[in-house]
Amino acid sequence: AQDTFQASAALCGICHDVSNPFHTRDQERIFLPPHAYAPLERTYSEWLMSSFSSEGPSATCQGCHMGSVSGFAASIPSAPERNDVRAHDLTGGNTFVPLILAEFWPGLDSSLLRRGADRAAETLRRAAMLSGDAARDSGGVTARFRITNLTGHKLPTGYPEGRRMWLSVTATDSLGDTVYRSGVYDEAAAALIPDPSAAVYEAVHGLTDSMAGVYGLAAGPTFLFSLNDTVLSDNRIPPRGFTNAGFSERLAAPVGAAYPDGAYWDDVEYPLPAATARVTATLWYQTMSREYATFLRDENAGNPFDWNSWGEKLYDAWEKHGKSAPAPVDSLTIAVADTVASVAAGDTPVPSGYRLDLPFPNPFNAAVSFRFFLPRSGWVRIAVYDAAGRPVATLVDGRYEPGEHDIKFSAPALSSGVYLVRLEAGPFFESRKILLIR
Image (cartoon, rainbow, N blue to C red; front, side):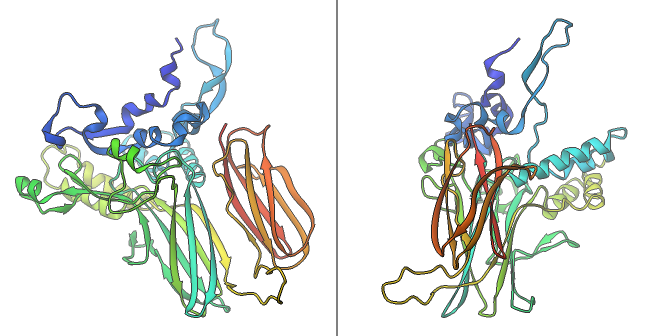
């Protein structure tokens, strides 16, 4: 029997708002609402406190993670075929665990599990948009990047242990030689090299001094999920519609980081050497860090309750299947532009380079606007493509003069999803992701 609860995000909230009742305000463990207990995971609350919760079925958890398909909702012979059955796909961002399951349960179909991991990689590529620019000034080159969260929850979200997202930045000179690197990942060691400039997004839980004393442990960050009594830091990027008050109400506010109300992006800046000519940035997501895999192995050594050496076997599977290799979310390569263009008195300034600005609003429902900049006249083409790379609309296809130009795109016939807007002008091309929500 159909029930409206099955189509509501509250269904997913049963498992995706997780609390620890043993570390709760005034130790009240009976009469508080579920979200008032010490937070472990707040994905449902993050969605509930975002603008997605008021935008209809396509903006629910099911709208993103359980797409509509044709099929039968019951196995009885008289059941009609329906076009609104939700696929039991439930794909998130986990590209790693499907690869190791057959190690523990022989007989599972590894090819199907691999397809699940591939779908997770596709989901990650829809999760965020990376944009930025780099300009030369008197002190060298400054690169600025914006990471825009396109999901209906924090980015990343969910179970905090071992999950992280970071930005890697590489600058090269005119000869192609590397002159700067940040957010470097050592694949052989499966380690993110310590770097004070790196933008790393994660939640870190741990023990306060008082609780550490109770257990006879060291205070600070730990992976002791059930013992941790505090959130030491949480700089994950909030979703569209974020308010500090709303997220605080559900114990999901940022910790050690500041996002203004309404922000669903983070801006980062890098001072680069003067020799920089080109900058490449890639946003990465990792399911399980080396630190977490090692913790699970070592913590279970000599554990009489670990009857099957699960900790050791998990670590071995982690090593065998790529050590939870990071998956790319978005990438961007930009050329360094001069900050000042020579302009005759009374003339309109001419842009120093080609650029396609961030779309606004994004995600969008009815229409989305863009600005693009041309340093010289020429033929310009701007087209929209779906997630499979198929063209769905041509916005611009003609000759334009130098300067700043505005365009608007409405998509009454398109379904919800991620689309790509691509600008082509002479030798230059640039793409932006847009997310349509019905």
